Length: 313
Ligand code: CP
Image 1 (cartoon, rainbow, N blue to C red):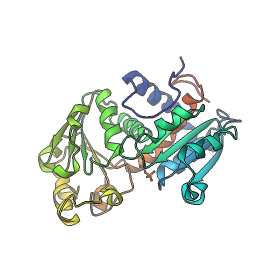
Image 2: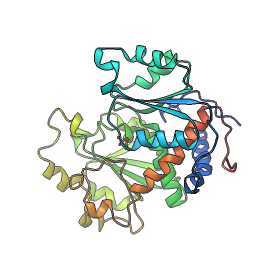
Image 3: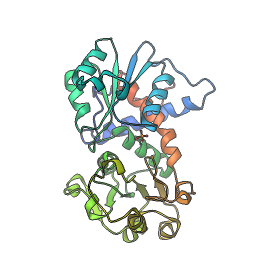
């Protein structure tokens, strides 16, 4: 069976079966990164451009490594050293790059809808690597994959997402993803950082971490996005940390088998202490590791590859 989507723009538009198919396909790509020779010829002859208009460590490098492990030719675009600084539009930038004969484009941009906009003006598949506060679909897919591997299931789990929900594309994509796969999702943070209407996406809301934490099977802590906090959303970082930062004392309230996640980068000592980030419940580096397999699966499926969890490549 083929994956019928031409682009990956967000999890809002995907059906449960499509999400599960990507996760199943990712299973068969995990092992490639454990081989001595970490390369397969799946995308040989194809060119993928990583068009990043916002900073990134994990997502950009993960896509580049995933593309290289699939034998694609990869090109990395950084906005600050491109003709975007001379005022070239996003559309002109992307269409000029596409005219060089590329096969796929990965984009991160600060504008919500930037990936969907390019999908409408380009012929090649477009992958959203984060568009403003809208969606970060490959992050949510790797989060789902990590939880499925760690817990054996997603159905029936209580997932608690804590922090700056208002500015978080990771939160939105994860609310869609975990809800569609049968988990109960609660978002938690100060009222100023909870977007109105989030319940309509399928999440419950809590303003009290101490009350919500004991129920959670999975706690996903989000970064305080200082670069987007133009207004005053809480009195001080210290106060935020006291109420919503995950530390060893609050962890005493959590279930004994709780799974702690963070998409990175972490503000250590603000939303999470180093002891929790590096502690026994944390799967943070596992998220990064599995991100490679998930991105390999997405690249493979959008290139026209067949769905499978059993093939070897
Ligand atoms: N999780 C995530 O998107 O990290 P980067 O911003 O470093 O890519």
